[in-house]
Length: 171
Image (cartoon, rainbow, N blue to C red; front, side, top):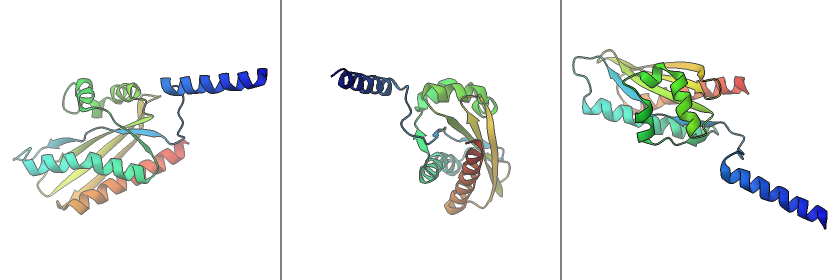
């Protein structure tokens, strides 16, 4: 009879820890993807098409990461804005991005930028931030010539593949 009570107590403690968020049931890394920022250096910065293109990157990356087996952590827009002290701040301060990810139980945070120095091309840039170390685990760059959506998708796929290689090496 005592053994049965001990087993029940263990299940109760496990359930309690699970509810409190102290147990990670999934073995998959938990990745938060922040909104990509637009750094448009052209003579006509911030046109609606560029803003729309930039906004499309985060959901594309989350989808690619899900397909690669990662758990996606959602960080609300207002929390991201509160942590961001200005354009490029989270991109340049992995410690602050990590602290934001920690609040939402992420293992890694992806901070990205669409950098457009010319009308002819742009760069997709992403930093992979390790929440535990508060440092960069990887920096990724993909040059895009042209503006077709499929080319942006290819860039996101390429960066996701590089992230997967980096995380495979970390394990």
